[in-house]
Image (cartoon, rainbow, N blue to C red):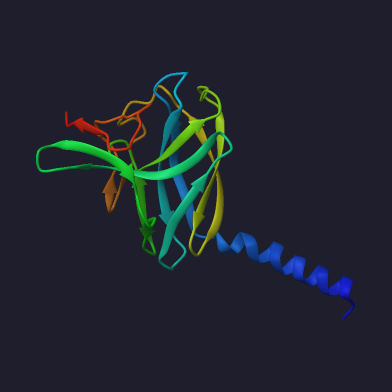
Length: 179
């Protein structure tokens, strides 16, 4: 086999196998918002479904609209104080299961926004999985969405009636009283 033919064969193998790596990962009801036009941070919410037949883990995210994107979570202590912070080690999504990134819970935090999130705009986001690799999605900016608007009910979760929207907050050591 000539070097040129070998190179073409390797490229063809890569091109045909790359889409298969993300096969089975689906994202539904994705939207992003910030609290004001001058916000330096924003949050994205979505349901990530793993129909690949194998357990996987979301280990990272990125977007050209922000300096960095992190997976964050809200937790409540015994006194009802809400804390927000980065999820260490990623988010496991079992085979044939899903994970909701929802207001008041886990979410993607866009930090260092490079410009305003304009209502109706589509934001390119790359999700990185341990097994599925990179999954490119488009997330619509929806500044007006109410906490339960577009709520979906699935067998293992309900990401409807959530109370807290953090908008433009610094999450480092931040505490917020529970509603």
